[in-house]
Image (cartoon, rainbow, N blue to C red):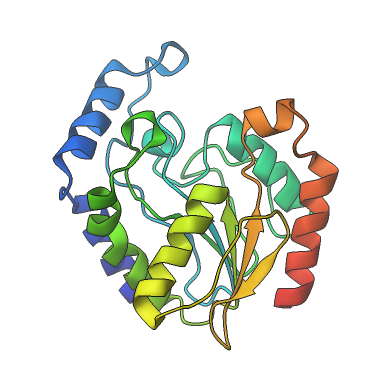
Length: 226
């Protein structure tokens, strides 16, 4: 891992700017859930995962309570990650069809995965202040990942907050509507794609299917040339 990324990750892991989130993480990691009762939870802010020279950034809103908050890696150890990585493997972006733990041997092809917010919020609803507090971590990630060409936002909330970030950063103008598969040019270098979140709810209601998301990521792989 690049030295800058290591330093950034250490800073993210030590962050305690948001007392509500710090307390919520502690509560989750102490009480746990029944199927993980004997596990030691990560119980800290969750940094991104991937290589510094990645061309593709996959972006979520926040770590899952018993996914990333438990395992220490975004989209790892929950049902959303099961679906996502099954698709990424079949799109030839991931070497594994699952993402279970920090030591599972997962490798991504020119892809970095992270969240707008590094801590899980109660009810998956962060406050504006918490998003603002965390925005410089995301900004530092973007600054370190200076070869990113494509951002895929998983879900409307991640999409909207990515747009908000770029509006602040480069005075982005215009109307940006979340619609699966639609893209916007954030600059002459970076393009943002909207993608439905790989949640069990979206799968169960048939809003998304494995074939649909595999084809989406095959397209992303092609346009990003990875």
